[in-house]
Length: 551
RNA sequence: GCGCCUGUAGCUCAGUAGGAUAGAGCAACGGCCUUCUAAGCCGUGUGUCCGGGGUUCGAAUCCCUGCAGGCGCGCCA
Image 1 (tube, rainbow, N blue to C red):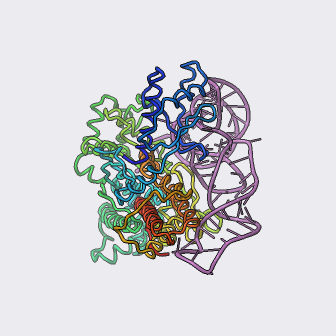
Image 2 (image 1 turned 60 degrees about the horizontal axis):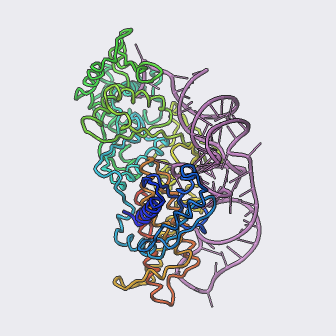
Image 3 (image 1 turned 135 degrees about the vertical axis):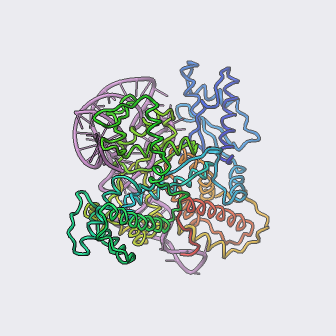
């Protein structure tokens, strides 16, 4: 338990006990602790008196007075209790609290910030899952940054986390991919060809066809079309998947597993899923197709599972995949990170889970809003059809993984964000990632120059200046930030918190000298900034952003 | 037409499971380096929280409704 939680629990206990003495029994959950906006009110406040007002038919201020009279703060982190406003009871913390926070950071070090709300639970985080018919593009870059950091946050929150990439290496898109490659292949040899409708038009298709010809002596020109397409598609998929793996690896993402859609077919899991769906009784045949009665589960329309050409639609292997995640592999929770354009698909997949008797709350879908790229103050237009797009590799090459990962996580996934390429490369102060890294580098430099003995006695009660206290207060919140982020599946709090920590440090730096005459004070302050460094380092590692010691 | 997301300062965004006087950064202006990294700090101004109703001690936050933008509503994925 964090020191912050300890202090909160004390406040809850003190309040509940005091209320009990008034002859009213309330549960601890009913006591709601808040942080007052105005610092002069103290660190925490409780609105219990106001809540009890109607029940006791008394003035909230009078109730607050009665409560406060019954509070005994001895032996706690509380220094002072006050009443203000409409009946808020305000608590101030004592120096022991601040000392213990710094000590706690020292003890836990690289584990400081962890919490255990997910202890004993497993979670599968599936993200990016870009189509292997082309490179990882910029839209996936946001999902990659968010998915990876979300996985890391959950891991810090105590979950056992498994990162997965779902490779769509089967089905319609792969057919089109093969047909597109075939056309380019034939074109290259001056043969007659027809380019498929809705085919892939990017330059990379030509490159793949060219490379195939270069690496394979055996010509496909006279092979049957079916074989030719299959050969080219398999070759292209292998290439593309390797490229995606490299690009994502440069982006700092390592998956535990690349799950192949094709393996669902190979292992008969798609057929199994169809049987399971049929067994629910919510399927029927119409127009030579197999339908799932999704309307029964609140969807607007029923869904086709198997087309009249006897091939499954996209959702069918996806149902099989989620059965595999939630039943076969028994993950307590599955998180899918998708683009916002898939939102209509969410209720369909969930309704299939419900039909199968799986609690659909175990499936959490994060919908990323789209990213617009801005260059020279103009929106960069991209067209997937024409193959004009900026890839993840382009982005990492242009702005670096640190800036990209930090900025994508800086905004909540629900916001339609603009990514300004010029700004991200500019090492300016408008770029929060540099602000945070700079704080880290600055601390490293100071610590190096102070050379204190590691076993030196330290006295944190010397850390009483306003800037020191403010800094410690913020450091104390780390585990709570992780917890809230994990509960809300929201990564954006963490980079914002990083900026807050950095800012409090810079303010401290400008008003308190670390390397100073008073040796005891110096030792205490070196310890303090070392704990700031620990927190920054831990945050940056969660974000997958480097923590430079020099800048 | 129906559904989901969004609407807060000139710009980009916070606003913690309704709380006290709605906040940061950037941009603008003015200060701070003979001493630990000025990629930094300090100070100054800004609001129809999209509009309109409602719920209550109290609403940017919850409900209803209107407006604007994005996205979806395939036997595509």
